[in-house]
Length: 152
Image (cartoon, rainbow, N blue to C red; front, side, top):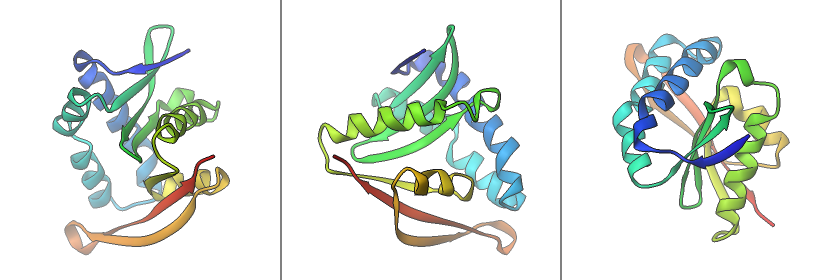
């Protein structure tokens, strides 16, 4: 098991992991217009830009990418684990890694929490800082929390 910086040649693999995970999990929490919003937000262009800026990390198991996290200064973005590997602590490994990376330069870590992940972040010591809503298609709203955690 290894966490390493993503390579530009892996953009499609990372996009597929993110898109597949969103399609499998998010419809249980959000209407399809919001699922589509997430897919558009985590598009190949955004992932490619983040990889080019050396912000994307992958969790690799036996030479297969099973998870990803993006670290942008003191913020964690795009933390996803492949469905077959969920519930086995791999998301926690990625979160621990991201927190350690951020702790080397910052005292507080920030992230936007979707509904599926909120309980996980609360258990990990994150606190709600603010609540936001973005209007999407069909009058639907994407509601999420900005969360933060003081690092040791």
